[in-house]
Amino acid sequence: MSDYKSEFLRELSWRGFIKDTTHKAELDAYCSNGTPVAYVGYDATADSLHVGHLMTIMMLRIFQRHGGKPIALMGGGTTKVGDPTDKEKSRPLLTDDQINANIAGIKTAFEPFLRFGDGANDAIMVNNNDWLGELGYLEMLRAIGVYFTINTMVKQDTVRRRLEAEQPYTFLEFNYLLMQSYDFLELFRRHGCRMQLGGSDQWGNIVGGVDLVHKAEGGDAFGVTAHLVTTSSGVKMGKTVGGAVWLNADRKSPYEYWQFWRNTEDADVGKFLRLFTDLGREEIERLEALEGSAINDAKIALANAATTLLHGAAAAAEAEAAAKAVFAGGASADALPTALVPQAELEAGMLVAAACAAAGLSKSNGEARRLIEQGAIRVNDALVSDPNAKVSMADMQDGAIKLSAGKKRHALVKAG
Image 1 (spheres, rainbow, N blue to C red):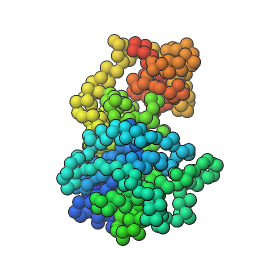
Image 2: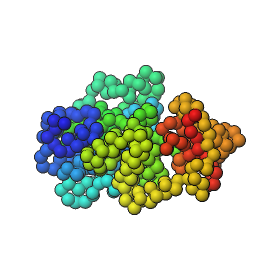
Image 3: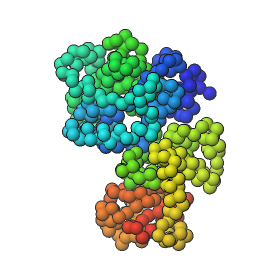
Image 4: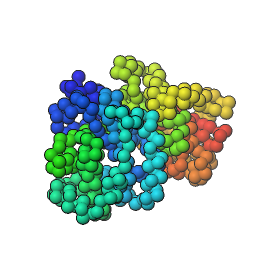
């Protein structure tokens, strides 16, 4: 059992979120009394968040459930610089119009997870362009630049990797740490926020903000980071043959979202039930104990719970019903043509184009690539847009991968 006194931190701990914290004892005391305030920042690099953001969204959800006040910070200002953390190359800069359009799309992703309003622990959404956009550069440097040393900043992993790889690390990006730290300071001043949550790749930025609040205002501030999630096969969470798993329904339908969770690798089901659902500990432990083909029941429970959170119970039920008829067009699974491919090829990652050719859905890899470019190929009913996309053992569902060319041609790929 966790030694935390705070119910919030105890739940984060047993669910497997926590990687690092600052000032553990003081953090625990802060979360145990009154109405603590915490924030997570999200840069507006796309018009939807994706499954990779769910870790921190769920942390805010649990935080609110235990009486905390969540702040969802939109990075209208920081997006103009681009977060260099864990990026091997600079991101393209977006225009103000693009950033504002992206923020409008992102906002809808939070509504199913957080309760917004004017109550004591209702969530609020703020935009850091409200203060960063008003700052004169010299004024900002004079206000907070004295609290940061180049000695510390160049030790960040992102800087070190870029320099070692002889990749450019622009002075614009170098300022990102100062800007994110300034966000924490402003939220401390404006909303009494004393805690930042984030992925473990944000540790350096979070510590920078904690230190700035202490040095500039003499205030106590805290940071909590979550593990970055990869699947058991080593794939980054949310990456599939169909691209990123977006949260907005216009980017990824409820059925495709349900299928993503249903296709979870056996070894990851328990972990994902803990991280990405509201199911209680007793129920999760029961599902974790299932073995053999019964693991599919746990996967369906995961898909239903995760889809219900985002899209509602009706959408989850509809997706499950549709999945039972996944081999559409009147063909049962047994009636579909089946291609056996070496398991080693699937474990290494096999081109979708090659799998289509092997399954007889195309005459060649080249023809399959053209079909992908035309939007005609699906894997497990998820549209494939990348001609170089691959399938692997992680895409197996009930021992097979379903390939579709158009609406009426389907085939299965199995490991032989």
